[in-house]
Image (spheres, rainbow, N blue to C red):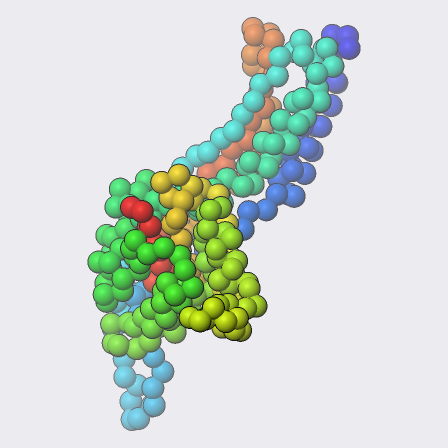
Amino acid sequence: MALLNHAEIAEIETGFRVVFHEAYDQAEDPSVKLAMDVASNGSSEDYVLFKDVPVMKEWIDERQYESMKAEKFNIVNKSYENSFKVDRDHLEDDKLGYYVHQAAQMGKEAKLHPGKLCRQALLEGFSATSSFGLCYDGEALFSNSHENSFDNLIGNVPLTATSFFGAWVDFASQTDSSGENREKMPTDIFVGPALYKVAREIIMSSLSESANNAATDNQLQGLVNINLMPNFIGTYVNYWALADLSTAKPLIKQNRRGLNFETDMTDMFKRKEYKWGADYRGAVGYGMFQNIMGANVGA
């Protein structure tokens, strides 16, 4: 390839942009199902969370007004970027294919990044020093000190059919400040690679073994959806969590500004480098801890 002219550079830039956005559009990360999407209009967002919604009751005489107890909390937006540079000599020597692949990987990474934040927030939810902050009541996402004595930290309990159903029952039995059942039911389980087979055996097998090793119908089959958490490895290899994702979510995914893909030619003359970068603004924080329970096995 001869010395690149402006038209050829513009064509390359357009090609990178197309490849980037195609990869972005095709990528999917189911981890974002953990979070409620919220549009943001400033550097941070304030939230007011009502603890308990009054239950319906028979209307006798006048309406019975109840005070709504609420908590306020704030989530601060952050900027995220992913960038790469291209040596002009490489482009002139027909090395474009390598960078096209890199642009595609960048697009995929940009799409998956919010999901990665959700997974990391879930993992750090077991710690009171989480980089994502604390819940509105000042406790970690998973804690046995939440209000209304809702203990959503299962503790050092390995995942078995018995422990799974025990946690499922506890989850579905939680009550509000007036003693009313919250009517929450787990819809999903989250496990790492090492527990994926165990989770499938518990929830997807049509048969299970009884005490005398006889095969019986598996009453837990299809009770929840199984979700793989790639970061539940190493120290966290045996961690697992149950969540109700049918209504309010345990996490909040705040969107301040959507994805931006730009070209920077300022160093082309000095360093013979062409630069491209993607960025967006947003944040992930903790929402309704009542919608999730977790086990920090081995902690």
